[in-house]
Image (cartoon, rainbow, N blue to C red; front, side, top):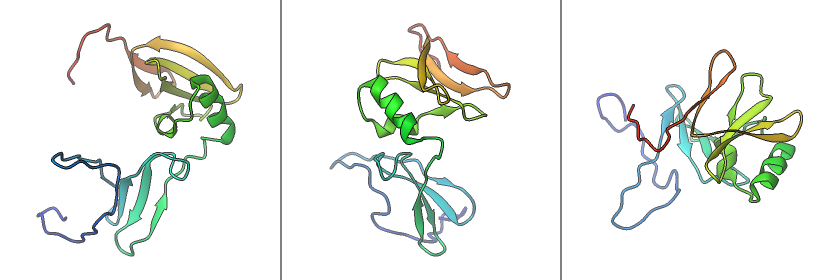
Length: 149
């Protein structure tokens, strides 16, 4: 749709994650530019980030990959988590230099993966916020409180 609500293009079943009769699931769509739409996809080996780049001008699509997620990184994190979870790979928050990846583990704690050393360290319990411009990692210690932003 354009800014005035006019339909520019419609494609049935362009993306499929899940559905249920009687429930409306809203999936995040984002425009990269005026012709490229970023669509959600199931996190799996063929689409570890769970995103597809779709060109509305010619219908071409490609799976978005993150070259920082190496086979070694997957192996290290999956071994630590004791499960192969592609969704977890899609949530990695990488440091600016690409050496460290912070993530929320299956236990709810924030962990830090060092890609160079293949190690994982406990950071904190809380909500991972991401990396600050100065290279420090930020998280919220909610302590059982609910915050609205």
